[in-house]
Image (cartoon, rainbow, N blue to C red):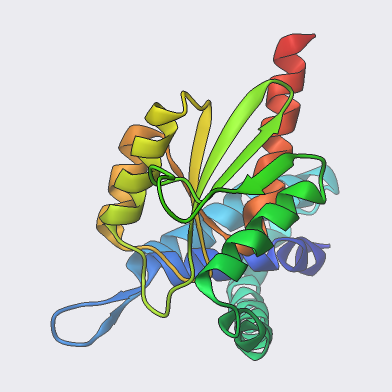
Length: 209
């Protein structure tokens, strides 16, 4: 039961580790925030399920094993991701933008790639349920920084859009995440784009009822 829950969220956990771990000025990997995220996952996802099955008393004795399984499953997922990432890296930037637009089209969004010039920072514009979503797409080999957030925020304002997101195959810098949080811009890996867009669809549909 607990292992199935970990596997169900394996992609998100893998992305969380990528986002929360970083190297300090001395080259040491700092994992404090990642370990806190593991504890939060166990508390919010595993514990309620054990409680429902009247097995919560087992949690202290299996907690170390759960942490171990999380690390193992995340490592496996990360390895699979690295094996598949070359398929994405063969794309050119404009092809990556079309790839992201297609992901939205698959779930019912009217999405199109903008012109290379004069797009005001918008790579993809998508519409559904009378709402507009702007994407800035970054095919990078390094973490995405503040500039992408600033560009998509500018595009959101220019197009009077309802939502804005940066989508990338890479991770994001700490400063980019901080800025994005303060201006309500989503930072996504392309693997999570459809999940994000589906949530927006449900949100806008419920408001219209």
